Length: 116
Image 1 (cartoon, rainbow, N blue to C red):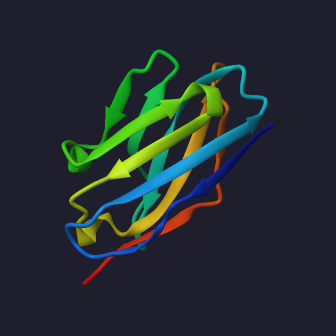
Image 2 (image 1 turned 60 degrees about the horizontal axis):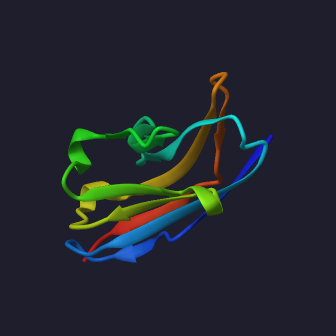
């Protein structure tokens, strides 16, 4: 089992920034990738950004150039830096962890609201 603890959500004005963090614990030695998905009301959950054990990254087209993802191996932590936030970025953001066998674990979710 893998446990994921998220932090950093909140309310921000358009153009502002937020940083989300996710710390993994438990059976994490077989890590393959970690990252963030989001789900807005009435929409399906979608990938925001991910990073693999080889530091390869992937981003949704809608966040490229605005969001960055980084991993602290020593702390088993992944951070999502979100800049130039837009109202369309409003969603519940979920941390995910995937092991080498394809098993995915999810965090509890953290709300990000972009509003003036």
